[in-house]
Amino acid sequence: MDASRGTLDGQVALVTGASRGLGRAIALALADAGASLHLAADGSEEELAQVAGACVERCPSARVSRAILDLSRPDAPADMVDAAVREHGRIDILVNNAGVRIRKPFGQFTADDFDRLMAVNLRAPMLAAQAAAAHMRARGSGRIINVASQLGTVTDTHASLYGMSKAALLYLTRSMAVELARSGIVVNAVSPGTTATDFILATLTGAQRASRIDKIPAGRLGRPDEIAQAVVFLATTPATFLLGHNLIVDGGETAK
Image (tube, rainbow, N blue to C red; front, side, top):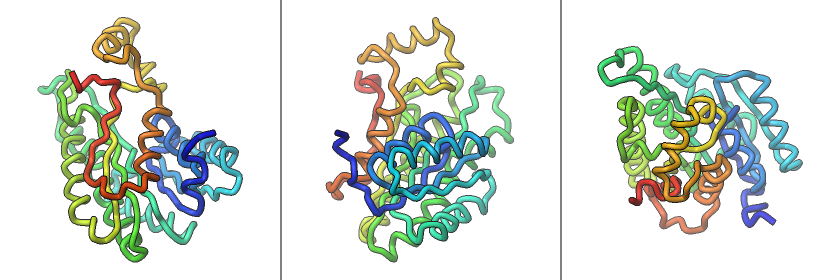
């Protein structure tokens, strides 16, 4: 039996970018742990509804709500949190997972690329965390988990803006952890390495995948459920002295 099963009974988690990839895996893992969920995404309603249904199958006692929204809009993150609280009466866990990745040579990035990527990857997590923290502070507890990336600490070709946004998100994580600790709010980050999501598998050619795997001591790509379990660990661990940490899940690649 999953050791985390039932550990989040009665708690409510909000997951962004929940319709596919890592977000889907995170939502399912939190449902396995017993959480009720508010799922947010900018993808298709059909995909998000499928994830919501799968979460209920995993945990029939869970209440699962969902919303399609555009987190690049300045008012969307706070509206999303307010909707979650209206639906469930509380918010215990915020997982800032939604992100945009634009791969271009450095000289080809535009101001519009910068604005779009930073709006979703950095501004939205900040605004969502501000809104969620207000509710958590009133209860005296809460968990905020930011999904960053190994590219927040190491470089990669054609990833200047993406890596910069994730490095900034890691700094924000540490700052939030320090400022919110006395309110009972635990803030940490998870930084995935190259993970076998549908998007990554469709993007990498066979040769690119082999080259990537060759750099990973574990000898394979990560699985979405492995990243999800790292999120569940940070959501459930009683070790609340663990604050401002960046949990890197990359098969040992950045340990070299």
